[in-house]
Length: 402
Ligand SMILES: [Zn+2]
Image 1 (tube, rainbow, N blue to C red):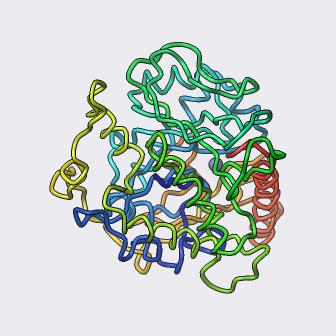
Image 2 (cartoon, helix red, strand yellow):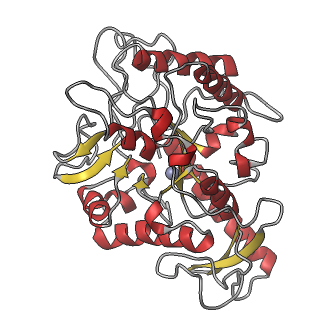
C-alpha cells in the first residue's frame, strides 16, 4: 500500500512527476501487478490547493480517493477537540465537494485520515454512522525503550474492540465500531535501525528527508523485507504528496531523489511473484477473504483482476483541457482568492466550503473593501504561506504525521 496525503495538484509544490499526474506516469508506467493491473494507490484529498481534474483522472484510472477534511486547518486542537458537528461538516462536506467537482460518487469514498492524525472518539462515531468502511489515523508508537531489531509493521484490524497498539498520548478510539477497519500508521525506519540504539527513526510520513535515491530504496527494502520475511502483514508506505517534490536538500532540478528512490523500490517489487501493489480498500477486501484457520485468502490475481473491478466513468478532461476556477473564501477581511481546477465546464461564484459545498452566492472571485485584486491576492498568498509553514512544522515534529 502506498498512500498520499493532502492536496492533489499538478503545480509547483506537490506534483507527481513528470508534471503529468493524470496518469501518474512516473510512478505507475511499466509497473504492473501479475494480472496486468497497474499499481494502484490511495489519495487522502484535502480541499484547498487540490486540482480536481487530476483527482477525477486518478479515480478513473482505478486509484482510491479518500477524505482528508475540507479545511485541514490549524491549530491541531481544532480537530483534536472537534465535536460531532465539526467532524460531520469537515468530513461529509469534503465528500460532497469531491463529488461536485468531479464525477466521483460519494459512496465510493469509503476511507478517511485525520489531519495531523488528530483523532478523538467522536470522529469514529461519525465515520461509523456515515458508512465509512475504513480509517487510517492511529499511529503505531515509535519504540523508545526496547531491544533487538525494530518491529514489523502490524496488520490492519477491525475496531470491534477499539484500537489496538496505540501511543498513550494519542486519543485513540476505545469504543466498539463493528465493521470499521483501522489501517494503523506503521513507521518506516532507517536501514539497520535497532531499537537498542538511540531512536533515530524516520518521520512517520516524510521518511529519509534530503536523502539520495539509493538511501530511500535501501530503507524501504529493509522495512519491506521485515514483513515479507516475517509476519507477512501488508506493508504500507504513507507519504505526503509534498514528499515527492521535496528538493530542499538534494538540489534536484527535475525528478526528485525521493521519487527516483520510490520508483526503484516499486520496480523491485514488480519482480516478486507474490507481491501486489493495491489500494488500502483492496487490501481490506482481500483480508476479509482470509480463512482464520488456514491463513489463506483469495487469489489476488482474480480478486484484483481488471475484469473484477467495478467500472468507472472515464475522466471528462485531462490536465491540458480542464477549467481553471477562481473563487473567494470568506475571511474576516474579505474574500481570499482561491484557485483550483476541475473538469466541470462552469465555476461557482465562491470557493466551495463547509456549509456551502457548491460555492453559491456572491461575490464572484475574491474581493475586499479598499484593496485592489492584486492586494487581495497577495494577502491570500501570505495566509497560505503562513499555514504551509505551520504544516511543515507539524510534519517535522517527530511522531506527528499529518
Ligand atoms: Zn494532511
